[in-house]
Image 1: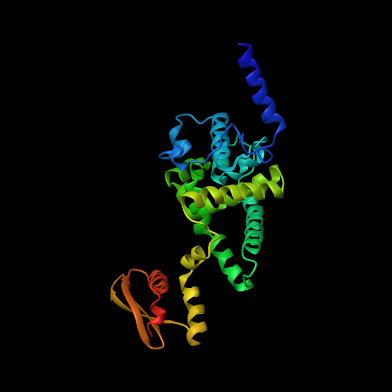
Image 2: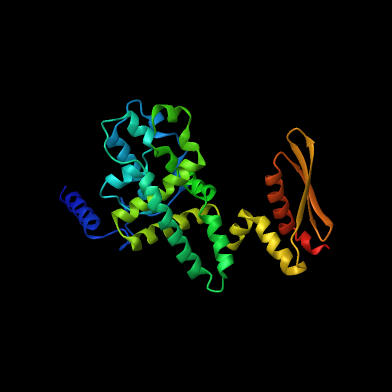
Amino acid sequence: MKDKFFIRLLERWILRCYNPFDIHIFGIFMQTTFDPTQFGELEHIQKKESSFSMELYLDHLKSHLSKITRFDFLSSSYLLSAFTHKSFLNENREFHHDDYERLEFLGDSLLNTLVTIKLFDKYPEGSEGELSRMRSAIVNQNTLATLCSFFGLHQFILLGAGEMRRETYLRESIQSDIFEAILAAIYLSSDFEKLQFVFNEILLNYSSFQVDIFSKEYAQNFDPKTTLSELSVKLYQQTPVYHSKRLGQEEFEVGVYLKGNCLYTLTENSKKEAEKKLAKIVLDNKLYKEI
């Protein structure tokens, strides 16, 4: 009995005296490794709970975030706002915290700064244009929504009943806003140095199971048309040309041409999507060399 008491006392002392950023081995709540499979098939928390409890919600949310970021939100104020859609507050007047919109505004600037610093340090020989393109591939709705979804953060977005029925929490625009709002909440609850640590932790966890969004390959896959255009100008002093013809009401045959030569054609419902796919095919297979 005495041994258990001293163990509990030691655990409390560790969590009180050491910040998770200072002693990595203990993590937060003694969580040491990230494993996305532990989340299983995620269902929105407002769908799971028969009667919504804010206290239970915050417990679930803090526990979930600690596994991803190793950051402990001591205050619930910013954290709660970061996950609250305005429709939830409109229908639940008993709650008086803010929605995520102001935090998303701040988070957008913080994210740009975090990404810019990381790219600047990682690619000391990178030109301004190259670094800008890589940043655009990272700081965009699709990438941020993918991160939000991968870590299961969308299941905690608080919505009004109507938005819940429409499953607004699955929209890319909402998920990307939430991701930026979370960064702002972490910054306001700590400082920029700890925000950088958490951001790097998120990236490390994501790249371990998915892709490195700071790699040159990721930027190339995100915007293959620009990459192909720049390569073509460098090699042949001209940009590729895309020609399309309508095959049906919602179907197009699109081809990519360089120096008058057709490099590849395909059929798609969207000309824009077809051009992106064509550029990627040409780059992946180095078809620009077959002229």
